[in-house]
Structures are given as C-alpha cells and as structure tokens.
Length: 474
Ligand SMILES: NC(=O)C1=CN([C@@H]2O[C@H](COP(=O)(O)OP(=O)(O)OC[C@H]3O[C@@H](n4cnc5c(N)ncnc54)[C@H](O)[C@@H]3O)[C@@H](O)[C@H]2O)C=CC1
Ligand SMILES: C[N+](C)(C)CC(=O)CC(=O)[O-]
Image (cartoon, rainbow, N blue to C red; front, side, top):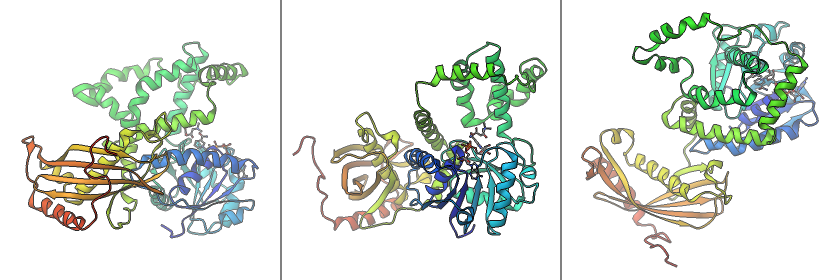
C-alpha cells in the first residue's frame, strides 16, 4: 500500500460523505471535490453522525483524524491521492466525463474507484478510463461491505486499502449489471412494490415482515447458511427437496416490473410518510446507526459476519503507549453507554473496569489458552467511586495498579481517566479459580510469577487515593 494516506472523494452526497467519514476517521487526509455549494454542510452533518457512531464499534481508539479539505479545482483535489473515489449521480455520461478527467490527473499508483450501484467497470471505462467498481453500502462509515469489480491487480491493491480502514472487500468474480447485492435488493424492492400496489400490504407492514423475521437472521448468517439450518438434520439437500418445487410456483413476479406511474409513487411515498414522517431523516439516520452499533457489537462477541471484520481491524489498531502505570484500556465512550442523564451510565464504569481486568489478566498470561485449560480469576468484590462525568466521545484510558498479587489473591486498582483528570476509580478484588472444580485454587507458577513482577514494581508506588474505602466514607 502507498505510504501516502490521502483519499480524494469526488461527489460528496449521501455516499461520498460516507466515504469521507470512513477515511478521515481512520486517519487519512481527505480532499473533496463537489461543485454543490451545500456539499461542505452536508458532509459535516454526515461526519457528525459518523463521529458519534464509528468509534463505538471498537474497544481501542481509532487513529487521530486526518485533515479534511474542500477544493474547487479537481486537479488540486486529486493531487497526491492514493485512493480516488467517484460518487457522482448514477448517470453514465456523467461518470464518463468525470473518469476521463480523473484518469488524466491521477498518479499512476492511485486506485480509482467508482461507487456505482449498477454500471459494470467495462461501461465506466469504455472511453479509456481505468476505474474499478468499489460499491459501498449506506452508511459507508459503518457498513463494511464494498463490492470490488474490475482489473484483478487493482482489486488486490484496493482490498488492502479497504481492509486498513475496517471495510470488507468482496471481489466479484465476473462483472454483471448491479454486481451481487444490488441484484438481490432490486428483486426484493420490485416484489415489495408489487405487494403494495396490489393492496396486499402497506410499506409499514412490508417492513415489519422483514425486520421481525428474516432481516434479523440475515445479518449473522446470510441466506444459504440460514436455509441449511431450515433443512433440519438433513440440511441443504432436504431444504432444496422441500422448497425447490415452489420456485416454479407463482411466489414472485420476477422481471414483471410494476409500471412506474405517478399513482404508484404517490401511494408508496404517502404510506412511507405515514410510517416514518414523524422523524426527520437525520433522526432516522441516528436511530439506524445506534441500532447498527448494537447489532454489530453483538456480532463482534461471536466474530460472526461484520463482527469478524471489526475484530480483524481492531487487532491492527495500536496498543496504547505505556506510561508510569500500565494502561489497560484506551477507548472512546460509545453513545450506547450514555443514559437519560446525558452521561455514562453507572453500569458501564464496571464494564470498562472489567475490560481493564481482562486485559491485565492477558498480560500476566491468563488469556484464552489459560482459560481453556481451566484456570481463571473471578471478581469477588468491587468498589466504584464516581468522581466526574464521562460523556459520549470522551477518550477513556484506564491505568491498573496492583495492590496485592499473591497466592490466590489479585487486588487491583483501576483509575478511569479522561483528558482532564480521573473520572472514577474501581477497586477490585479477584480470586484465582479452577473452572473445572468450580473452586478457588492457586494460579500456575508462570502466572504467579508474572503477577508477582507487577506487584513488586507497583509496591513502590504511593497507595492510591481512595483505595480501601467503604461506602459512605467522606
Ligand atoms: N444512495 C445510495 O444508497 C447508494 C448510492 N450509491 C452510488 O453512489 C453514487 C452517488 O450516489 P448518492 O451519493 O446517493 O448521490 P447524491 O445525489 O446524494 O450525491 C451526488 C453528489 O455528486 C455531486 N456531483 C454532481 N455532479 C458532480 C461532478 N461533476 N463532480 C463532482 N461532484 C458532482 C452532487 O453535488 C452530489 O453532492 C451513485 O453512483 C450511486 O449509484 C452506492 C451505494 C448506495
Ligand atoms: C438503492 N441502491 C441501488 C442505491 C442501493 C445501493 O446501491 C446499496 C445500498 O446501500 O443499499
């Protein structure tokens, strides 16, 4: 991958704005070219949404944001960019015009991507351009999928860059109109329009049919893995035998496209207003993003689907720099940790300190292999002091001091710190446990020795202010 971390985004609407946020929040400098005088305002609105959501996917801090610049001159915007992404409206003559200009201006090593939803790379490039299709999904700053289509070597270079900003490149084996995902979405949309036009359901009822059922399944297992399970013990063969005949029945209208009349547009738009008109688009976006974060964090636990991509990306993010005391957590406060009082809810102080304990356990050799072999530490007591408010987006770092590390006992003192001081302390007492016998036990000699080294180092530090307190102590 090129050492120059500059991305140029051409067309800063819904999708271009999402690309800006994806690169910028992953530490890239971003230049924007969009003649719309409203482009800067719109992009800043997308960025505000991205800043409150993307960092919440991770338990480590993302790199420091890059610099964002807006340019009236295309050549100036493109200069020095390692990634150039075109996201202008879906009109082939406009794509030809802009890709003709980009090809002349871009460096030879630059990856040139088009966000096109449906055009094939051979169509985009038919006047001599050298773009690959890099088709993302809205919101681009949260959803990892990018369909890559086109020149194989460029797609390999594009994949590396996309992975480095936390995305999931899926290289399409052969070019085809609308790639893979939009063909599926188009089929569902077309069928949905029929069902509403024919009075079978409303937009709201159709959405319930998706989100109360198969929509929940698809984010974690997709279509084929889900249907394999639906075949029971006999799996996919039984599923095919049972439901294959239905393919020949009239369960879909396939390419029978509903006529796009004014009446149909009014019907759909009117029902959509009745369904969702009580919320602005920005409010809907924030609701969508909060729900996506919750779901993706659940997937992160099992490493399924998009959760695996988040874990892979997180493993490439740098560990915090050690200072006097070991930093065991460095992360932003996610929006989902805040409550009706407008600050971090008390439960998450314990959650954050549990993350610090887990990290410290790893550092003394009590990681996944040790746990699998049946050894662990369990918390038997916590004392939390809430000293200052923590808010969404604050960078939280936790230092961990060993008060005692001897025999079965591990006694830790976590300081939860934000930029301007200590926001809370959590004193936590843990005992070593044999997970097979379900009783306390001594740690292995190796773990005991590593814990002992920390205990000895920290013994020279002053006793922390607030250690050993009881509830209500002044
Ligand atoms: N909206 C969606 O859900 C998705 C759209 N796409 C694709 O992304 C592309 C852009 O779509 P949207 O962002 O939805 O459109 P949009 O209409 O929101 O944004 C297009 C932007 O391009 C700018 N623009 C127009 N002419 C330009 C030019 N000559 N040079 C630079 N900027 C120019 C406009 O001012 C506008 O800000 C399309 O190819 C679309 O198929 C891909 C994935 C999802
Ligand atoms: C409707 N659409 C074709 C623009 C959709 C996409 O291209 C992808 C998405 O985000 O749904």
